[in-house]
Amino acid sequence: MPNGFTPNGDGINDTWVIKNLQLLYPRCKVTVYNRWGSPVYESIGYKREWDGTFNGKILPDGTYYCIIELGEGQAPMKRSVTIMR
Image (cartoon, rainbow, N blue to C red):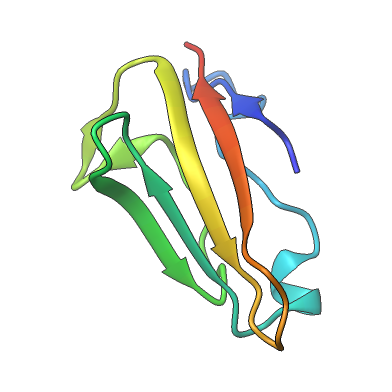
């Protein structure tokens, strides 16, 4: 899982991609939080990659925190992800 991406519109690393997550864990839940603990992205089944926005607004550069609930009796994964423009 990548720990950063650069959503600057250049077509390279513009979204946060977790390869094969939907294929391996179709019922997973991915939630990304800002530093104050407010959710800024959520996807059940990881059907859409995160583009670094919240409610259509560009989020500032910085570190965000992610919890991925895989289901199937597995412990949640906790990671950080950094937006760099």
